[in-house]
Length: 581
Image 1 (cartoon, rainbow, N blue to C red):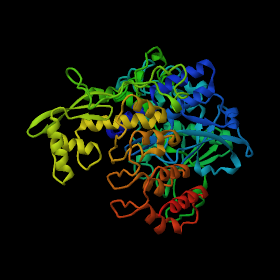
Image 2 (image 1 turned 90 degrees about the horizontal axis):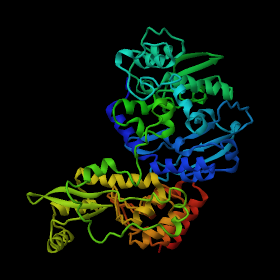
Image 3 (image 1 turned 180 degrees about the vertical axis):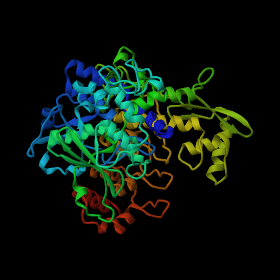
Image 4 (image 1 turned 90 degrees about the vertical axis):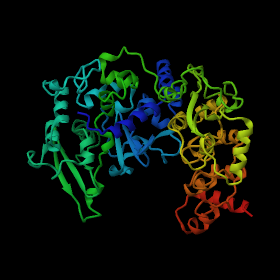
């Protein structure tokens, strides 16, 4: 009944581990319990306008983040370039209504901070917005998730109330809603699944529909969840016709008449400007089978590892379970398990500062009931590296490596050899790759690096400061050789950039493609104030990348021919040129 291949489940397991940190969940819950919704929004890294706050006063940012679509493709970050309308429970909007709107993050590599505002429904294009029903974001209605996916009063499809899997022979055998949802999932054909879910098919359900039965999009879509989305559009907005695109020219069309929902398979092949492209569009990512059930079924997560509100919705009989530590500064289970030494931990390289309380710009962010639960060291241990025919242990802690299997004289000799173009191997090759040179790293070192970056991406600027205060290597690079300076867009650069400069980061550091932070900032059109800050910090626009393209070359060869540039961005480019001799 999984409907997901192992690689897809592994990706979602990683998302669940990192994307909504346990500390965020705990702080949001504590703020809600105190009745301080603004504090909950701050903890959940979401900005809510005054107008939107009046429409969604019970918005739970941690619950929202849990359910929002993800970029996927190896990324744990949020899906980009989307507009969501938050639909309060039972709401009916007239054409002139003002609706709460969530704009998706602009880049999968940028900040994961969210923002909710308002918009006139009449000004929105229904073919370009997605609806978020209340159970995906309203703390008061989180329990309605179970009914939305076809669950019964006491259990989710495929499980008992306590979260135990039903035996295969019992699936779909009852007459309760959950059994019906199980029959939907077990249907041998897509058409049969839609018919079981309550759709009226415009085609013969005995025929493979839509002519083939291996459509990747439709195989992950839950017809029960989908029919709820179709009815939400009709009931809440009066939009009785909607579509679900499965390919560029193929789609399902839904027509609602009361409780009657007709579905027909259609194609606009050869008609690139077809009127159907402007019909209200349903988002397959928001109508997919509940991935948390597949993760539990595949033993990739336990009910205790789910968001508490999601766990209580899916498994009402498991509500007394303690929450397992998920991703967070004090929870490094998958990485620590790989790095933890069999005996005593290996000391880190060089002096590592003791964890210190954040000060200055981070103080306000760290205040509150959970402030004491600051960062614990990500991992302390060692990794075995093959070196000169022997296995050496390389110490690792918070991005710092210690080649303690070699003397100072050996280190000096190997580094001199590298400086003169010689080839290094073993521990020294791993050290070079760790600092951005081409090459392969041991799997456990890659896992440690990935762990730190994921914590920072989803924990935000506050987490970066805490890790730096705890002794993290400020020169840490990611798999593409990029430093925190290269990824400044993902954080509050006004606060972070001075700290990175004080830590000695090179504003002209190059990644594996030879790109500097300024080059990335210009080609990806980062915020104007960040571009100006990099220039003021000494960023050199003349430095070429591996394709012999500099920032100034990009401006002359590309930007000068564009007419739709943001005025602030144009001002930043003018400032760059003025400062460049």
